[in-house]
Length: 238
Length: 317
View 1 (cartoon, rainbow over the protein chains, first blue to last red):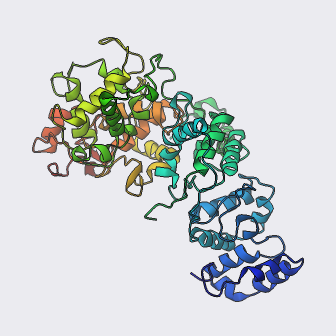
View 2: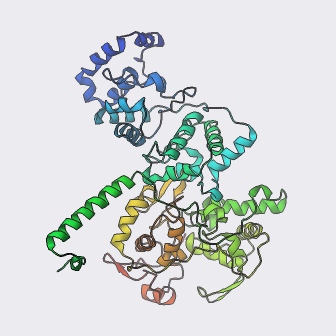
View 3: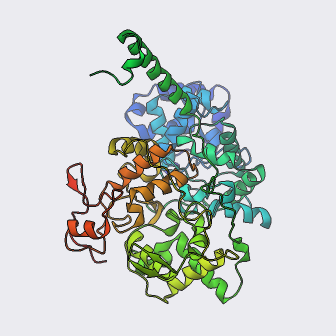
């Protein structure tokens, strides 16, 4: 599987801090990108881009998505670790094509070629899931609403249960239906709102846009908070 | 052979130009609309005139009767888990009875409850409500009929009775079953159905109709093949299937297909093999004559070179 966070050759944190010095990243990026060994080893290529970026247009993914691909709950940056490779790749393509426009991710995704996208998707899909929940359990009334929407939906309002498509416990159904647990509440909230407005429109057959249009802000906040409070877990069989 | 539209055009060139523009226009329109969701109603109840709402689950009594109601509800939501010994496939009642049998336009249990006992032409006798549910296990769940008075049937009956609180018996109730659907303009067709399936159904049910599972749980149910409903099930009638699909599918996008699309894709689904009818009469011809002598059943018909149902006697399970 190549260089991973758990390999003995992985550099310690003090070495990583060097990457924040100006110019260091570009130098390192250039040095690494010119290595033909990377192109021959996609697993290593994915790790390299995640940890060091690629050229001047692509910073290290981990600078926002975390050293272990765990995301950043405070900033609302999503976890990538353990997401299905097909889903990650589809998102990078969507960022580049404009069906999921994002001021941070779109220019960066456009700078990646197909091989790099595949390599990154493969790398992140194999990282272990974080174990801790992504947010506190909300107050009982909000938690009850969130849990009900996730498990049963609200059919009077035309809201299908999230787990009906995203799998038991929200662990996802690869590749088209991503896990919805193990993500920051602010991220889930933002995505539902993005589908609602149509800003994000890479959902197959408009299925999420349809649901999001029927969700109130209170529904969205409740389900996002409850989902973030669940411990991330993976499907037992991949 | 002249094109069907030829009579409207003064010249072949004009016809060709218009068809070309139409094709481009449609393609552009479709490409643009591919980013917009199809228009749909919020749920299957739309247009049924249904006014009845079952009580909220918070009102299930906190006593022994309430426990039985909850068991009935749980059986609806996860039938292999809660009634496994009577189930022979990977479906749950909720796959065709949306929202655990609460939803108008999705064969709600409250509407069924107040219409039994009733004569059914399916088995040519007056059925009690329990007997009606036995049929669900025998056919739709490809399993065994739970014995009358068994905990499984008492639970489902308790749940249905509780859902139907206040509903008068033996009266037409709006929202019952699946809404009627007008006959299609064109006879349903495998090729058109397949195109609808690939565009609107396969993302969940997969191209092979096998559905999807996670950790041994059915997420999207199989629509044909050995883990789906058997030939005795009501969903095997493509008229019934078209009515279900039009009001309920794709999931969350009720009434987003045209009626023709619903008929075509129902035909396509029911034009595949599935487990044998448990009422097997020794041959496909005899079984068809006894139970499937309808234009809406493809049992015994030859589709893509194979006779549907010609798979031998039912397997024991």
